[in-house]
Length: 109
Image (cartoon, rainbow, N blue to C red; front, top):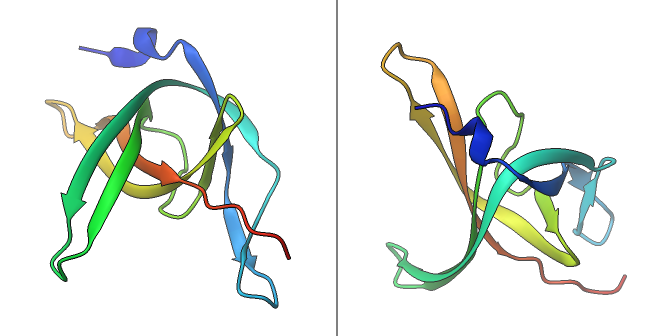
């Protein structure tokens, strides 16, 4: 099944380019992409015992170049890509991506 028809929402993806002199991430210009955005509130237990709250799941085309730590904007909220997994079809091709997002913590410079 091809899920592209379900990608009826728009997210803005900004690729992390570097860290500034204060250690904060800097980003390139954001581009709009079709996707499926779902708010979630799911906790993940890391091997070190820390809990991380996943606050959104995004499904998007497998051809998009999105990496962990990139910035996703949906509406007026900013998120950080925490994890990325690829859904592989029966022919070995990437069908779509599943991204787990955490809220972006805004700080002033």
